[in-house]
Amino acid sequence: MKGLFKSKPKTPADLVRQTRDILIYVDRNLNTRETKREEKMAELNKLIRELKQILYGNSETEPVSDACAKLTQEFFKENTLRLLIICLPKLNLEARKDATQVVANLQRQQVQSRLIACDYLEANKDLMDILVSGYETDMALHYSAMLRECIRHQSVARYVLESDHMKKFFDYIQLPNFDIAADAAATFKELLTRHKSTVAEFLSKNYDWFFAEYNSKLLESTNYITRRQAVKLLGDILLDRSNSAVMTRYVCSRDNLRILMNLLRESSKSIQVEAFHVFKLFAANQNKPPDIVGILVANRSKLLRLFADFKLDKEDEQFEADKAQVVKEIAALEPKDLP
Image 1 (cartoon, rainbow, N blue to C red):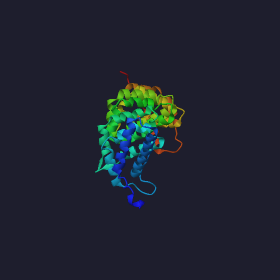
Image 2: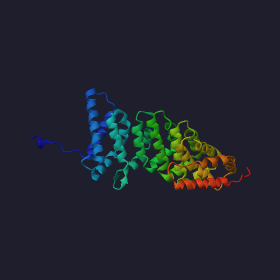
Image 3: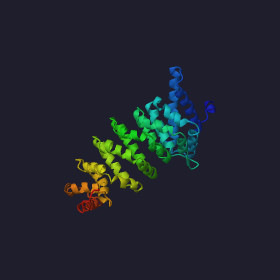
Image 4: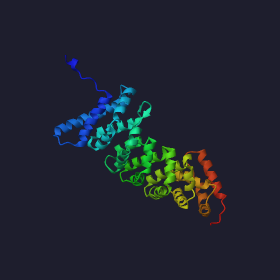
């Protein structure tokens, strides 16, 4: 007889609605007795785990696209995402991990060929303020994982790039907690490399303050890892064709050249190699300003000596060709009259 009264399995939409109801309860933090609160939290943890299972599948079953679409549609119909983000600190560690994975997956789910997460975030961009500021809380690694998935959407990345939050990343990258600092560096890189046209526009409009901060706080940092990551990312940015206007401007600055020449003299081979990839842009510039030529001519013998001994651990034909070209350019320089 028992089997006749089994409850109907919950649909993906039911799961989302029940999750939303409990999140509203948790958010309001009603003064209910402790036992009831614990029951609600246990139920919430279970629901979030079930949502994750629908989106990711498990060891026995693959995710079903129709179920994923229905779950996604219900999730963004009302403010479930906002509630989940706001209530994240109140969840236990396991539920936080599950919630982070749910939010990440939802950014990629299509409903009738549309990424509806993008539409929702465009209308709720203030959620990015919470996620970025998460670096200043003990939610840092959960919120940042959500943030990196959200900035897959170009309009969302543009919002973060153009916000005051971008200035904060220069400090987040230098936080004393290594894991959080490394995570902030990963998000910073994603913001500056994923959406080419948006990044080029941002760098052109914000050139002065951005590179002033980049040079002083990252390239001239006392922290070895910060310097190494920064010079590598700088090379990735300047060598990207979409940033050619920014690159042309960067290699006409004597301050930038001075910093790169100091990085070339570092004892770390990996920093030297990354610095070389940026330095070669200064040497290759066919319209070098007179003061850049002056610096290169004044340091010619030191630079040529440095490059004579400059070898990679593994043979690399492209590196050797680039180095030969740089040596040729520097050797052929004639001092220009300074204005």
